[in-house]
Amino acid sequence: MDFAVLCAALALPNSALLPALRHCGSPAELLEAPPDDLAQFFDATALKSIKNWQKRGRPPPAYQSYLEALRRTDAHTMACTDADYPPLLNEIGGPPALLFVRGERPCLSMPQVAMVGSRKASRAGEQTAAEFAADLGAAGLAVTSGLALGIDRAAHLGALRAQAPTLAVMGTGIDRIYPPRHRELAERILQGGGALISEFVPGTAPLPRHFPQRNRVVTGLSLGVVVVEAGERSGSLISARLAAEQGREVFAVPGSVRSPVAAGCHRLIRDGATLVTSARQIMEPLLPMLNFQIQAQPDTPENAENSSTAEPDHWLIKEMDFAPISVDELCTRCNKPAAEITAALVDLELLGRVEATETGYRRI
Image (tube, rainbow, N blue to C red):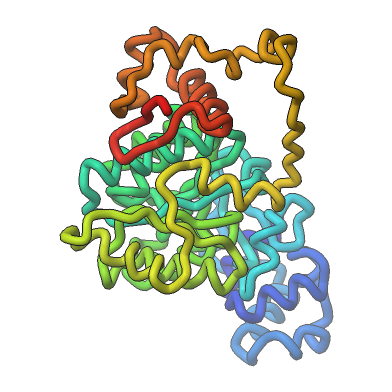
């Protein structure tokens, strides 16, 4: 018996299930507890469902359909009391008591940066999101987004280009990919060592109210959220507000004052979000939280000789100009994979040798 799935099949509300699980210790212990011990958490309807299960030992019809959906998609459950439940998510107010997960469970606890933005993003916005995601992934961070069109898609693809894990938090059941055209992207995320995540039971349709709800999971998993292109009424502003309430860093990428998809980012910056134009500016404030130790080495000929990145004639610098060049163009020039290019770019950027622009990287 999968007691986590049984909790979902009994339709126990998250607001009651979360404290009850924390009190009891696990789904199994909760569903075997005396009903009097659970009365402080559940209303009469939920208690009746639990009592019926305890008395008859027969799960409701939804139990089997959920199990079949999980088996069909190779998905599994994760309860808030599990040892590998992501600790950052467990700290927010009202995290999901249960998660449904496809892919690699360990990546849920990796250091993550969320990236959100307009579904109707400009080409430049998508390029910025992809390059930022590639740089963050090359630096060892997972990139989290919502599997939507526009900026979400670009962020997932950027992380995949850097061969870094990327996580997609869904507003549907774990067995329903939305939008349907992103089925291939979802498979690439899984093949790349990432994960698909949902708090909704299998079969849940893409209802509009689900997407703002899932946003708290996107931000809750992450150390910070980066907003790339957002209109004045964009749902990405909800993510930014949730991130701020959760104590996460909020970053916003500026755009043209004439662009409607930049208005939301400009509003965030005006309200206190950190303006960023490169992945380095995102990573710097996160370093203390990651416990990164950057050891400065003396500037000696010996060290310069041993550091391939520190050399003035570094192999990548030789292929760059003072005008911006994209990562794809550098891959073609150097005949090297994107992961190697982006890793070198991050190193060079941290050393002040190159800088990111809206259209690519340039030498300094």
